[in-house]
Image (cartoon, rainbow, N blue to C red; front, side, top):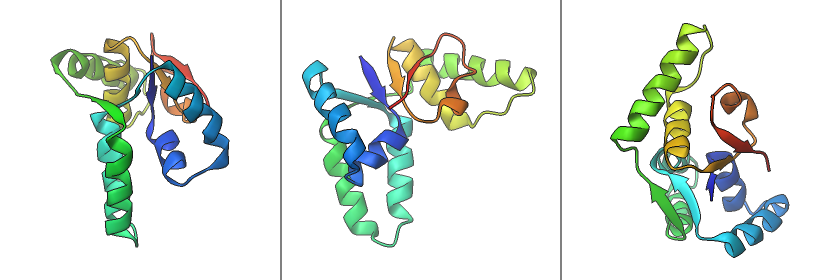
Length: 130
């Protein structure tokens, strides 16, 4: 199963033509999946936009079609390990990306993203670009 990162979800919300095929393929595979961290990022972006009410409503409509994975104890532990391992190496990673990676790894998913630079340094994380 595949987990949709925020950049892909934003492209879907914006109606980008390049995501149409991806969305169709995902519909055939199974219900779309994302993380509660991605949900936070979507609502944050929508809430600070000029069209706040419209964008928040659009986010809510999209999220109703997706399964939302939580940050549970196992994925939080994994995220902490990821964040610490990269920090020890002097490699900066946003804590939200570490939490997304932890959730994806713990649920044996593949992350669909264009932010390869953010996630390529995470061991055992399956990443696919769109």
